[in-house]
Image 1 (cartoon, rainbow, N blue to C red):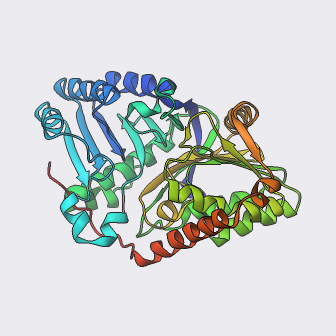
Image 2: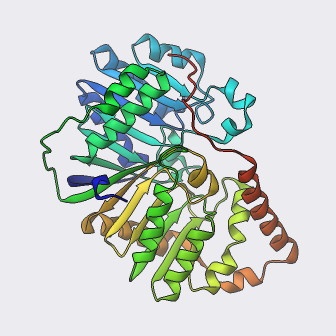
Length: 393
């Protein structure tokens, strides 16, 4: 990735679950003075969603420009009254790929806005995998999720702002403002908030198709000591699997934390089809048991790390719109690694080769059938990127 994608002088805060993420985001919303932008897959009309809706409406009523782009499939359950109240208070609510379009075009059905990004006054940003719903609170067990987000301040926020604003304008088909912003190259005097070197990397089906996958590959290929991955929906393609196996064979300690409790039964069994190959090649596999794993994070040698919305599965790597922060900062990476190692020690079971060998023939058959069906299904979809359709302002 070009050096221009990386910015230095950033400060980062790792946030685990809704208990840490929601208070930080609410505080930022309440302190906003000019603009709040959000890209979100799921906005639920539950207790957490009501609290955030109130915060967004209060911000809009005091003159803050509030724009939310929600995925029409992920946020399908929102009532008309809930959306009307937000809009009546001045919150601009847009839906990515209106459901009418979803069911007219099969490719559109699979093509989702899966990002979880919030931008406050072009000064503060949140990037990660946490949606606005009470399932991200630990007290919602056993249905609750384990997941992460990152609060960031510093020069990288300007890049997050630019890409988020361009996406909003493209979504609204405000082409005049879109091209004006795209051609604008305003030089800023960047203020340093910390020492972290950060890249904000998005995935779409036009100009940024493979950036996140390529960074995973680079991290695996350059790793010398340890690779630690926690990924909710793990069904990577051949390139990533080969890079992981090659890393393990050259002596790198490779650990993967996967779901122990299945959210999507079919995908869970497809992932199990990979266990034998991973274990036979020296990769350690762990299943997280207390709750549902929803994380999409990784660390490489305690120096490079990533937190975001991108799973290592065909939907995230080939079709969906995703966003990850890639971070070169020892303190941050070591902190994330410690979080994951603590979960391995306290909340995971290690999968051994004997576990795979004890599977009966029908279970093995179903695991591999699930794997090939899911991998084949993706190639029936033709991912393309056109201007998103809007459900309305």
